[in-house]
Length: 195
Image (cartoon, rainbow, N blue to C red; front, top):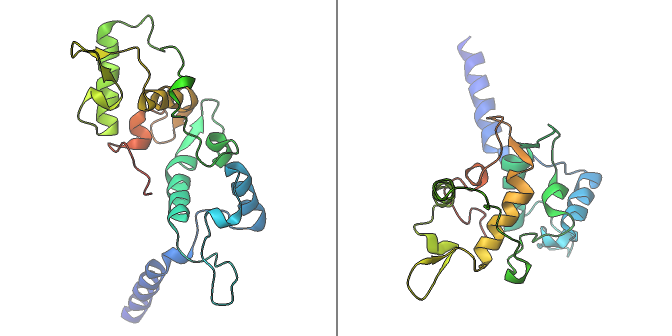
């Protein structure tokens, strides 16, 4: 019996040590082609390394492979549409690797019209906490009198609006069954993807 327990422990330890050899992603040719199409990139985008023979080294680690695994685990596997359907890379990326819009000329009107000042302040405080930022200046500029300007678009404000429209309004957190919020993905970090 002891020998059996010991063998099981060794197998579990070996499995844990070699866990990085396994993928959460569908690494079949079709799976990789779907990811490539969803991001609008070629294989080299995530697989920049080549081996000694000059061939692409698909097993070599890279920052973007790490990002893909993070997104698969936290977003694709953790969120569903409000209709209960699963999502994939294309849901967010829609053919563009860097899909987050920061162009202030693309700013849309405020989504907060009709909300009371108290509701707006509460929402902003939740966003501030979810992003782990210390001040309102992260998204807002100040007027000459030192007060916050709620109207002037900034890159971070444009991103926040886009994220609200594209994600919080359309996605549910699988764990809670509630609408996705800034906290769902950011978890206290404005920049949570290592790049």
